[in-house]
Image (cartoon, rainbow, N blue to C red; front, side, top):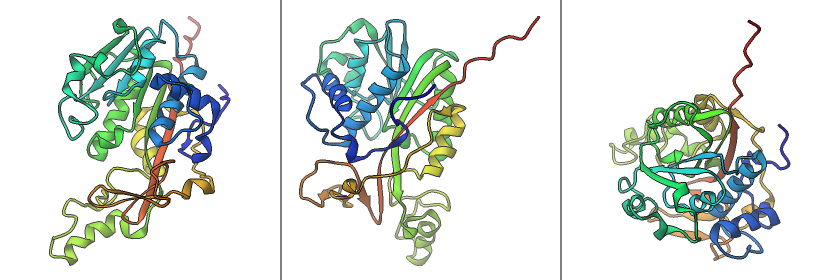
Length: 300
């Protein structure tokens, strides 16, 4: 199918004033539409909402799976628009347990909702994304917002992508938002990091390998997104990835210091688009994928 807008793209400050994105974000957050978005998370949720709406996935017969769902407000927004939303995460475990994946979400999801929602349309499950406990072809839509990059090794990430494709129905849509490197400095490449312990008597970046970076946290190059997410999923990108950025996106480049402190170029954290870690820069990237319908049976 043809799409009315470009969904497979990098987060760009030029999108932040888009009336449709702002309206979607206002609905998700349970407030009037903002005049402009302020940060990447809003962009991610808005892009998901618009993609699902344009694909025709928002209806009372639709089953939607959220992977690495945390307590995202989009879960509750979806519960008012589809037949069933299943939220999965390792609630109460891992480094996000105290922030975005509290164990209490399993017992009392309403405590995290910014809006009234149809409580019978949301199910919350403790589940590892690398081994989804659902039959093949169970869901009309599957999504993951800024989670897949935290799922472990490259093999773990590829396995989670394969599971995502497996549980999606033929003809279904998957939306994966992750972190994409828009500039990878040569000194941040894996072979260089791997060599550093050799020259520093093992004092720096002990966990680096020839293929795995450490200094950048968890972010992918466009080629890595293709090899670790798109191809293992068995799904097809709805559009070619647009890696262009408007010049304004660079105006408030935000440096992430080793302590976690954020230092924005303008002194303000919004609009929050591009982040610099070490020498390299990343932002969010939205991937919209679809599963080809099953071929029609041949003549008897």
